[in-house]
Image: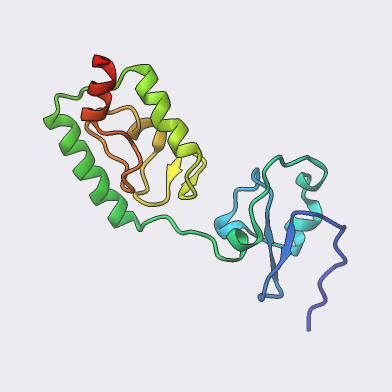
Length: 149
């Protein structure tokens, strides 16, 4: 039986059921499912860096998955078709920023990607015809009403 090396203390490490890996709550760690091995944990420099908003223990133990490649491809095809049929129109900067601010508060966001549809948010939020798959963005009608007031 392999003995795991003694690991230095780390407030971001989470014990998992799998004895060969750990979860990491640090937002700057980019690993599939937030999982790391003991050897990575031993050499990690993040434990000495401050993480303003560490991931929750539940998020590390039950990571949200991105849609499959096929599903993301289908979502992209539908979105681009809608974008082209709308004349490739983009939003005003303030409307674009509003969408990104809404995404900032969403639990289905990871870095620049939406875990619901798999799209890159910095691109999707720009197109006027694009919609949030969770219905969180204001619709074009709502944007136009605000302009008229």
